[in-house]
Image (cartoon, rainbow, N blue to C red; front, side, top):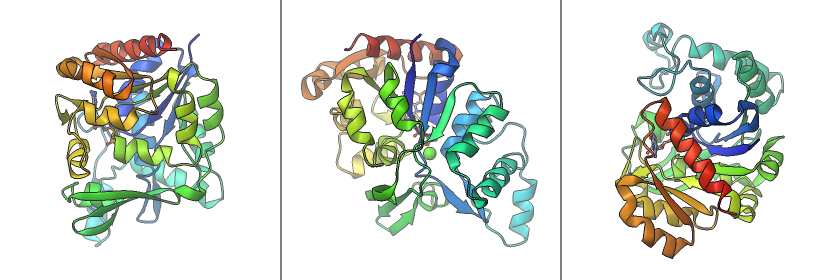
Length: 313
Ligand code: GDP
Ligand code: CA
């Protein structure tokens, strides 16, 4: 049986993983998830990318947003707002239980990875979902309007500020969470999910040792482009490519991953870029539909990505 480790952000990664756990035995899938988005909100520890991946794989995610739980209300948030509390980050009533559970256990000194393992087991998930690190790692965004904590930039200010640079607070001293190195070492295929390269993948790889570990295994790494036809499917990936001086295209993304991945999965819409990407990055390019509109599309992308990575070596 083939096993896979997936470097994952939030929504894009969650959709990819949703397909992957249908084409592999779920127990052979490990999602290594970004925690650069994590924050303290109203005294609670929020891990947005871990929750998006978990809720999606559990079939509980709100299909309209791609995050949060389906069928939840904002009654608590509205009440909090009336009290003058922080109300700019949408936390639904059911989602709140996750944050209470996680924060309570963290306050007792338990590591995020163990809490995540229990949460996912309780939801019946067989795949492994782990934070990339149990240590504190926070994405900080340097913008035209000063330095912003990640969720300030992303949610409160709606990713509208021009980004000059990014840094990952705590990265230098962060250690990989318990099963991360083992999963990367032992899996047949490593996938860089169609996630934001700057806000989801970079923070993950900033944990010392991980970038080198992925690069060393380049021949079994496949990266899926989050850019289709020069635009992000959602979110600020294209804007950030531009503001940081990269080509706003799948080629721009491919250059970022040249040393990390042996295979680059390019959308059909970008097929004309294939030759240039192969020439510049020495990655093998495979062209397929990458828009994950439904479960068939998710599974086809997961299957095609695995096949390409397994043939790459
Ligand atoms: P976030 O943490 O929720 O922002 O999620 P990610 O970083 O995992 O994913 C955001 C990225 O996923 C964006 O750059 C999107 O362009 C990309 N994305 C979302 N849906 C799709 C899709 O169906 N196909 C592809 N190729 N990329 C997607
Ligand atoms: Ca995220």
